[in-house]
Amino acid sequence: MPKYVIERELPGAGQLSDDEVCSISRTSNEVLSGMPDVQWMHSYVTDDKIFCVYVAPDADHLRQHAEKGGFPANAVHEVARTIDPTTGGR
Image (cartoon, rainbow, N blue to C red):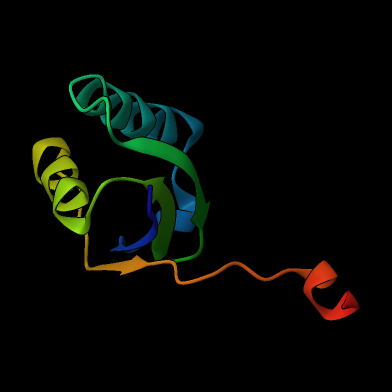
């Protein structure tokens, strides 16, 4: 199944409290409970954006998740390939 990175513009994201992050995560999990073919892997939080990594059948499923959860989904990018330090060891 394809992997995606969702870019979510959220001013002040880096200053969210633990309670706010917990609430956002809980809402996402509640929406995902009705979407068994979508899996949230993890997210990276920066000052004003959150980058979320998901596995899903297609980008439309992720836009539906965002809409149902009330989350921004400013861009949804399918991952073409993954590279890491071991890629250069060939």
